[in-house]
Length: 413
Image 1 (tube, rainbow, N blue to C red):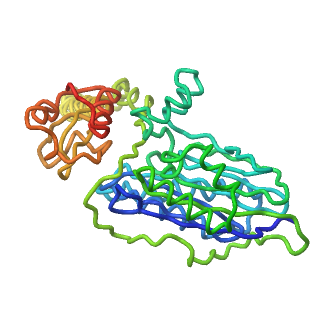
Image 2: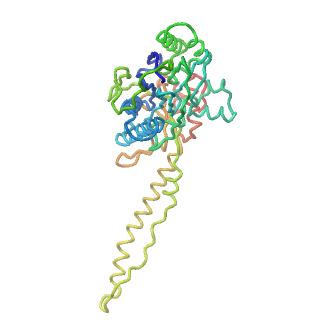
């Protein structure tokens, strides 16, 4: 029988963020970290929805623990996505999620995004999750080394998260566990600041779990604290006793990170999800043909042989024109979402997706994609005029400009 022998946890805003967008659950048998993204689009709300959904438990339905845990993550994705659709202020919000569930004899893991799960066994640290990020994919393809990935300008771009799409692919695994295995669940605010060798040295070193958690967070802040930092540690062992419950009752909320339902924000989160253009939507918008309308046969009298046909033509013509116009407009809109430009959003240099135009009735052809942490006022006036000229760019070009600004490098728009 597997049980949690001890656990410790801590979350910290870091040194460069005014708000904490991380949420977590640290209550046997569930340990999970969600790192919200979206800035003004309320990434902190997305992360809280994710952990609240997990806190509801696995239910009493059929299926394995892994299947039921995946179902809960899918439900969290659905709730976040639908909430964003209902509130334009939160359009595009999302969150990572890494969760570990201590079952009777194994550890069930679900994972989306770039938060991570590690295991320390025999003083050796092993990463158990794979980042869903642009640089991780480049490393897997052999186009970047792990060392280059640590400082890559696109390291904050993740390719998978809960919320931005109605459905999401969820990594899931069931792991065998040995006595005294120590597990670490953390947000990228830790792993972006400390190397795995530094993390291993701290976890394998002396001190209680609380002391080691504090040391990890403190060291990450000393290294710069560029993002929110959340660290959960739990040690497992095999012992007799009743199995961990899978009941539908909610887990207690006393160890969940508090988050305001309607947060007030002054800065933006820099993590972004790499946008995905829906090819099926583009094809449907640009390629659908209106259904053919054949003649309607019916009895005619000698007195009205032509009038009915003429009236049908008058009625059908405007509808066909409107339908074709609608197809053109929809196709143009989706095509516009494949380009980007740099602008000003709430005083911060920001990457926008779409075209820099606003149609009548307040219909905007653009949306915030990647809010940076660089205030517009801090950019030199000559550079500011060229940078914020709303010139259309590729996603890579726009993000590269902003990333260079954040690192203080020379920028040539």
